[in-house]
Image (cartoon, rainbow, N blue to C red):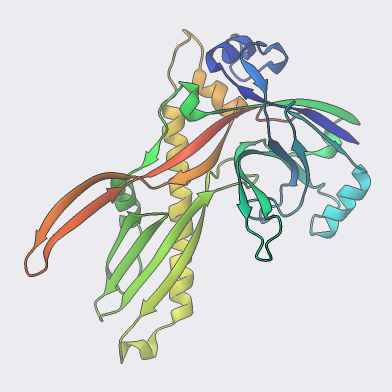
Length: 339
């Protein structure tokens, strides 16, 4: 089986959309009509044909074929379909349910060189960011030979909408929805690279942990961010600690944080969809984008948005730093991979 194609970077989103939209049906897109002046072949990309298993890998997919793209945007995968399907089946996919795959595209943004401690040439390592994910598909839904055009554009460069952010007020609202038995207070502050959560109990118990947020490269297009609980600590003083099930509490915390991360993903997706402007009379832009495009997070930033000095009696002046969470998002076309 052969799967090949080209990765393109959109340079003029307005012209691109004007050439691919079916004005009679917002659910359709015709990429073959894309204006030649609205995009260019992408350079220094890495394309993965990845397994859509929900636990496959981390930043890079753990189970995939990959191809590094040069300056022409071209990629190609040649493989034995039966052998590939069989290998994925061994990893837990029932024979009655053929494995699903998806395209995952990264853009190289820089290179770093690690010095050789022995004095020889150092090791050069490319640094990538994810810029496109397709919806998942089955190989047996494709032809023996397939050629696809994949398109992406950074939301900051699109001129379409403002990039949605997660404010401290958003985090306060989300944290307020978490209920943990035995805690009288729970708060979360956006710090550099994570959200710091702290809580106190009536018995003097103290809970603290960090929620790290990173771009999601999973096949689930509803997931823009992945979370990880770090530096988890629960301190319960004597004698209350004699009857505390630490394992159950930690599981409850992790369940609540999972729900919190899901709510954050949903909020970002909803805010992004709601902010799409209505520019074409009688045409539903929101339906078009939700049906035909994908959104991928390339990076997560935690910038300072305000600072104020608070004078605390007995402790002196204290600088209160307020941050927000900003995502570097990319829009991609197409959403569905079809023969």
